Image (cartoon, rainbow, N blue to C red; front, side):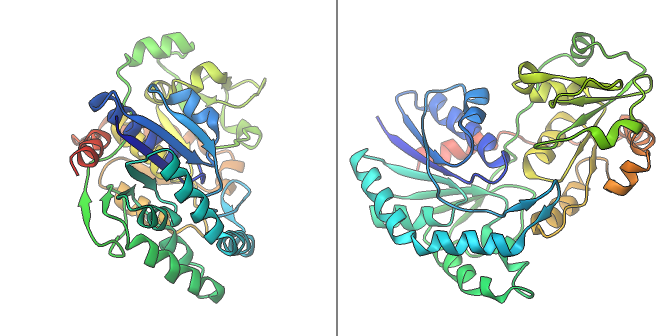
Length: 356
């Protein structure tokens, strides 16, 4: 039996969902594997989506960025949290090294907490990074106006350099802080369900344009004027009794990619998880501009080659144009030349880990 320890960033859900795919592939290829997860990503995400045995421990292993509202970043608080973690990083590393030895861990897989390669290095085991952006890249976007990030950025880069193998996903920036890099295909969930059957199950008429609101902690109150329930209906995992909104609840949350396939357009802020699944399931994307997060610039630039996309601001939504824009983009998507894109990155990653 081999034991794999996953360190997963708690920032958003995209890191967790793509590593769940890797965990499942590892287990499929090596069913005697023991899989351990240490993260601040909520356990319910793993309970919803993971279909292989795993052990979960809530551990503060990185800080990411501190979000402010739906789209903003609180940069000073982001630095404060990062600095506070760095003050106790020696204790965190010592605790993790002890855990690794007590549990006979064979390898670390991480996405992409900067302490993970240092922990694995001190434990004498290899570390495998998987991702499309790094935290030094994100923080360097704040460095000009907040130079206090500079020393942290250098420490993060030095840690990343200790990675045995970095598996670079599409939709990424340059990852030259790593010594050895291998490109892998997208990691994305792809629905196998029939679209028309899904729309019937959801009660959607063929003539309706269904807009999936894929926003964490979403509030649909500001979108109401764009959904009349006739031409346009909003699909929301949040609670709402307003007309024009179909509240889906927990049952459909577990079938996210099925809902995505049933929709005509996805509205979200740009993040790897939603972008990759739009690519995999051939759905167009309306994206909200995301300030102070450099990954968004890279994602949107890279996304243009894969799917129909348009930016839509919150101001435009409040002006009531969401419905019109969604109908237009949905029509455009029907004539889009969808390219075959590999989405078996989880299997490729698992094979690389097992054969290292």
